[in-house]
Image (cartoon, rainbow, N blue to C red; front, side):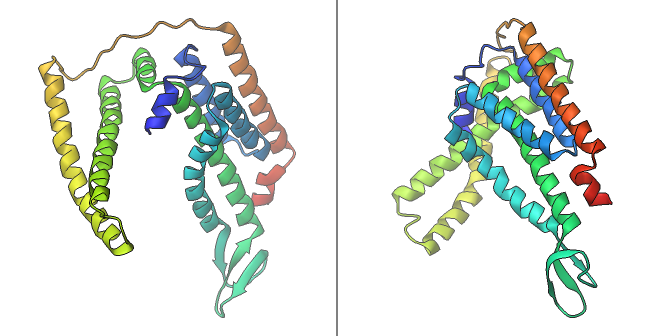
Length: 266
């Protein structure tokens, strides 16, 4: 989390208008969520990875960040690929358990691949935005878009309290480690339980202190900060439009030709 925030404030695209980056990420993510074209989904993921690398984020860091959601996605789409039926017709692989048959069907496998690519494409859009745009600038754009103030303040406070929670957990873990709290598996489980039990209480106390500090400085339910002025780039807008139009055309071309989604439902 801290590493993501550091890159957001030190990348090469920091001077680019945050509205352009937000529009690029959101529009491309919507295309990924709607598109049924593997080519378009993979192209969106590659383009977002290229944009992140262009921003100066090391490739190894980006891949490391992608492995976290990818590990959960593999388990989820694996469950989609497996199905149970009374016979083994249409299965690529399966096991006969007597009364029923469990295995991987061709349609389920195609659907799981589509879901995996769609999720990776959408996640790459979110990583592009979080790695290149500070949260303060995102909140500034949402405020200009007339998003309800309550939603903006809740988002900002939750984001700040995440750091409080992580810092508190690290403090407790360091204290336990210095006392050999994780020297073996049994002690580690015990220390982890103590950490989980005390984390919420200590984080809540720290949040109360933070709220008191804000109130003493005139906090009335809305946090206002100085906003950096950015220039809108016509070249960037044209590039965003061209990329997203190409992704849409690629999706339409594969849909008209049948593609993977046709094999799933036909």
